[in-house]
Image (cartoon, rainbow, N blue to C red):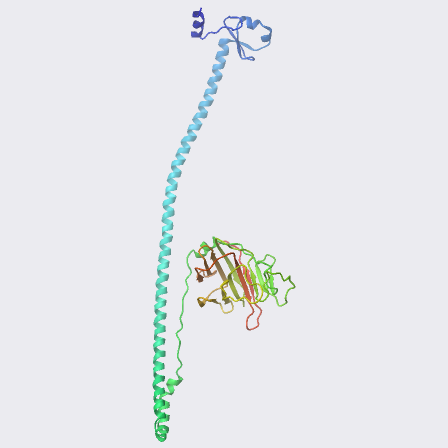
Length: 389
């Protein structure tokens, strides 16, 4: 009973489940094989029916076309894979080349900066040695002058003990010999320091640049603020402003609107002509009513005058420091390192720095325009925007 069925399976033949007859046709609409009895049924009357062999050849052709499409797709993907592998190899090679070139170029920069640092320290040592020699020479001259004066004083004392006639007779000669010594004025040594710009310093600092603006709520009534809150200028007429608890009323001070409790920050201030100023940072809250003393531990600043082109720095621990400069000051604050430094924004050298400061709580930029002793009107202070280097 099984042999005919097995024979059909081996020959790729099949029988109709409904009629038990050998299937000879294929209905393309119903996608099923048909025997003669099925073909006569009304449901397939208007359908596209092909001989099974023809339908099989047609299907094979479609499969071969599909296979060729898939083969081409596969080849494209394999080509893409080969391209990716080549690109990966090129990328790895390029990455190694860039790493090598970066190491080489930074090595040149490091070597250049090391050389620059070496020459700077060498010249600084020469300046120190020359200044020390000059100071020692002047100190020796001053000491010799003092000794000569002491000898003269001793001779005067001896003359005082002599007889009147002898004292009167020797007085003109003794005084004439020492007259030149009395007219000689001591010369104090003038210590001079040259400054050098540090290559790449400002470029590094500008990476920490912050957009600082003035806080109008803290500005003294005599300070006129620009609309963009970037410039202040002294006004002779006191403005009718609300006397809020945050406004400074005795010093020509305005604070920055920004507060710093962490991070590194840098900003630059352009100094107007004939301006006596004070720049730096202060702890917040700061005394708002009454005079503010910049020797206070709550304020860390430098002061100066652009008319004389000089900076003066003062605090209660280190005393006074002075330096020449241009008309732009940069302030760099490193909160975590408890460090603040002042830079010349034009000639690009450090003016002064303070470290190991007591930074607790928020800090704010501090700006002050002084009234000069000669009664001239103060100039302006302008917070510089970040600009291309």
